[in-house]
Image 1 (tube, helix red, strand yellow):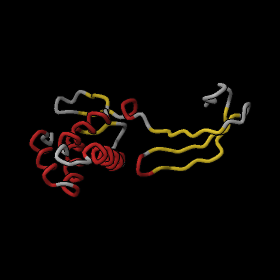
Image 2 (cartoon, rainbow, N blue to C red):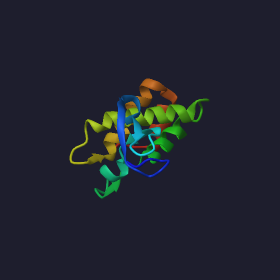
Image 3 (cartoon, helix red, strand yellow):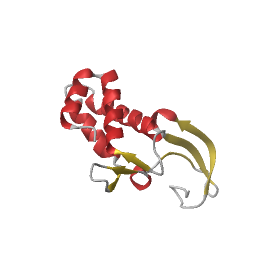
Length: 135
């Protein structure tokens, strides 16, 4: 990685896995100007995972689509956006263990979201199920 201040090479001085957000936190130091800065590195799921729908045609996995779907189900809550973001991270973490060859069935996503919503907010789960069928 290059320095955000001078564009020269950097090295990592500290690194920590952020399990809740599926990210890696890194503290970096520039080899040239010795500036310190922090980066958060996350997987680009759209480039690594595909979703197989009912038609069988693969589509890129989009976290934003999952987030929006969760947000719509949680709109009745005052913390809907934060809760949807946290639930999206939880669903992605659960899905990552069932991914085979970079592909996941859309039904597996629906089932995982339904289970997570049932535990978190039953009315939101009912709303989600009304618009999403396991396929």
